[in-house]
Amino acid sequence: MLLVLCVDLDDDLGRKTGIDTPVVGRDAVSDAAVALATADPEDSDVNVMFQGVHVVDELRASESEEVEVAAVTGVQGSEVRATREVGEEVDTVLAGLSTGESVRAIVITDGAQDESVLPVIRSRVPIDSVRRVVVRQAQNLESMYYTVKQVLDDPETRGTLLVPLGILLLIYPFVTIATFFEVPGAAVIGLISALLGLYTLFRGLGLESTVDEVAERVRSVLYTGRVTIITYVVAAALLIVGGAEGVETLRTVESGVSGPPSAVTVLAALVNGSIRWFAAAGITSSLGQVTDECLADEFKWRYLNAPFYVVAIAIVLYAVSGFLLPPATGITSFTLTDLAVALTAGTLLGVLSTLAFAIAESRYPTADPA
Image 1 (cartoon, rainbow, N blue to C red):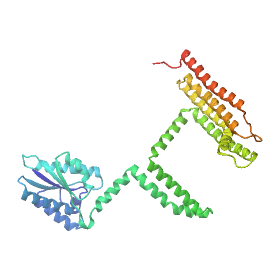
Image 2 (image 1 turned 180 degrees about the horizontal axis):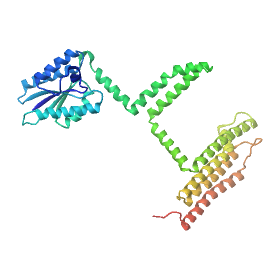
Image 3 (image 1 turned 180 degrees about the vertical axis):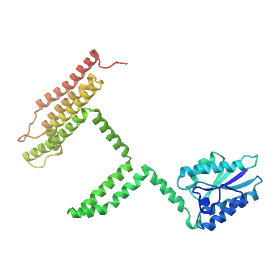
Image 4 (image 1 turned 60 degrees about the vertical axis):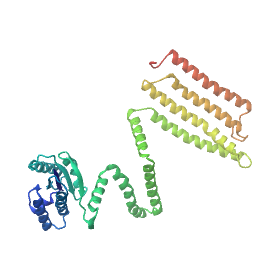
């Protein structure tokens, strides 16, 4: 048996005509559709019931099995209650059918919102097809509204669409406020444009998850009291100072030589002036990491290699850059002998530290080998 179900989720039929639902039978559904059309000619549920009557007439003419039509309604205001009410009325319709055959349903709605009850109907009776009745003069209007409503209800999609729109709408008020403080409007527009561009770039490259992970990691470091957060800040400050010292060394070299310096001289000056500060930053950060490993009972002797490696590399780079620099006031130049001694010292420092901590690890293991 085929059951044609006309769904009215917000109960326009009952509220506007006073007809008790569910309405079962071709003539009863046709009369209910006429009554609703008389009460409200613009209601789209009128078309749903007339479509149900039309489908029944077609099926009875072409199918040999029994066909029946029913109109079921929900309630206004609450989608959950409306869905539950539709399910109960479907149960009433199925209980009233005097047939020994299995029942299959054809559901007729007037839009995507009414189709939210399909899982409830499907849990009670198999659904052969779903037909949506759309008035030609307003084609897809309700479906578009419901789709937009669903998009705005989704937090991720809502943020993607509304955040850039909100930034654009704030341009005019921000420019207006800036004029009271004698701030150029172009500066405000440029700042907002930069924010919008960064937001779009982050969304386009999918970097928001990376930013969230970094923020979570920083928050975890702050809350767990790790020493590295302090040493990293100090190391960053040392790197800035080292960069400034490298530039100052380059200026000293430029003032002490005739003509523009070569690319090798520029690089050597930058390295020579900054390498000591960079080495201090590396030692500071590595010592902070070692301290955290000790506090977490995960210390291993080989972790102490890092500061010595940093010192060895700094010695080598300082000597090489000093050897490449031309003689100038305020600049320490290295001879070939000095360079050889520095290279040997850096190599020995790295090798000896590796051997020493490897021996210490073997004699005084800090972790279970298993």
